[in-house]
Length: 290
Image 1 (cartoon, rainbow, N blue to C red):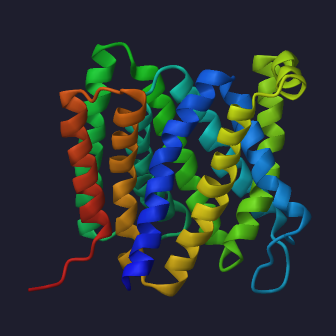
Image 2: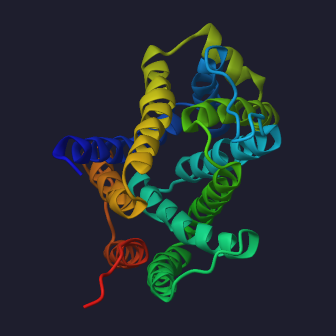
């Protein structure tokens, strides 16, 4: 992979790690469900110009597009935004969410009948040991609820990965845009039911331009641009060459959380996080035989 494409991968990793800080700031400024609804509403706007994705048979798989929007946009960010809203540090959130890789492996075994390699199982056990360490100490400090929400967000992302696999080879940008359409609608419903209509009215009648700028960053660079670059790299290079870069997302998330939000990283989070990253590395990287 040439250096310019390595820099592209690192650019995406930096955006995604920084976006956890952005989401944390957003939910400190407005209710979590409304923040997610507005983000995906902005991400859905290009649907005016981008046609719905078509599968290899020239048909639009609407049920799978809707399911993708509900899993990736609605469920994932309903859980994640709420977790950050009730106290989960942005850096720790970026770490926990990476466990989606192993939830994907488990779900793929039952739905897609894909059998994981032994080395992947070993990596999963090591990663979940790290998550167990973090979960145990958070249980002791009565901070388990946001941790559980983040784990549910990881499960939602895993289901989105499986749906993407079922959809097959279609335009990933088109899938993200049209999936955002079906994510925004239920998110607005959740916001109306649990947060009230006053917040929505206040956002449009008394706009906060700093907040609007933050939402635009989440919708376009972090969601659409990041996904487009990442998908292009996956199409151009072997998965084994691209996927390991995702291991840097929690690192950048923790660094940005520390630098910009002053988040402190507990000792048990360092040890648990190291196990998670080690497990991910073992599960993703291919080892050559002697």
